[in-house]
Image 1 (spheres, rainbow, N blue to C red):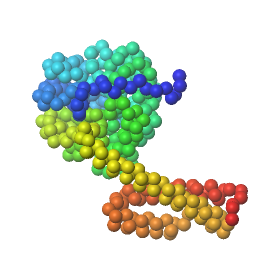
Image 2: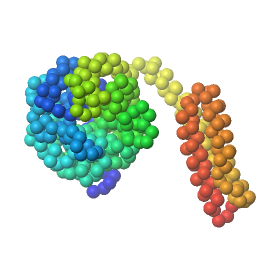
Image 3: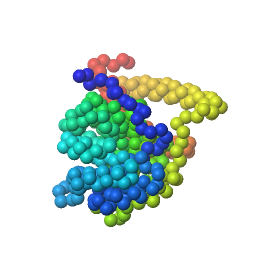
Image 4: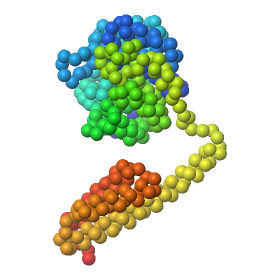
Length: 366
């Protein structure tokens, strides 16, 4: 089978309107805790699906690893009492079989499982011929191809209702977050698979309930379809991930405070003005490309000049001066220092590579 086989994406399976919200505790700890949380979430009238983990992957043994299949019965009872569809995480074929026998409505593949093609393929094989909705969380590492590959494996098993969940990435510099958002990777996924429903999991990005509102709003502003947010009847007493869970009532307030913006506008004047501004950006982008090409042409001449005089490619003092002077100039223009630094480093890396090619040529034009 071709590796480039297109996905059979059904982009219309989520209910109309945004955001699509999945919520519930990190783990189904007890029957009472599961049912109480579901009841209080149902009272919000803003939750589409009730979630709870019953198998909890842990890095080291001895930590709480979930209620197992007993928790599925609690989820089913929550569904019977509230009318909410239910979902849980699966990590292997046996989990899938147990969920299908119990009547779980929706599944998700967790981050650690997404990173293992063997595990994802086992799940895909277990789901072959069974059309249930499945969401795929991004892998812990910022690897877009690995994320897409997991989605492709499930698609080829015949599933027609697939989605993705952006839950952040485990990197060295996470800032204030448990997992760095790295929004650009989620945007790239939307670019590669534009019809695929994409949710955001602010709970796992933040690791801190105080940050969830901000991240949830940004996800919606980036046109994501919905949110998966952890909610617990008594978060501070939760057996896992206590700091990132909200009470149902706090979640209701958070959702009420979100600004849900339209994807487009029917206002003719708005569309005309937006198109005019976009044409201006297109023209500026064209100028930038010409300027970059001219800069690289000069870099190539510098490389040839250095080769003739047997001088190294990199002069650290010159590079430090560039960073310092350009950052000062950019700051005066209202540009972010980090943005300018990142941009200059990309340009510098390309310039170094270009000079290396010139240095390695067998003949240099004078």
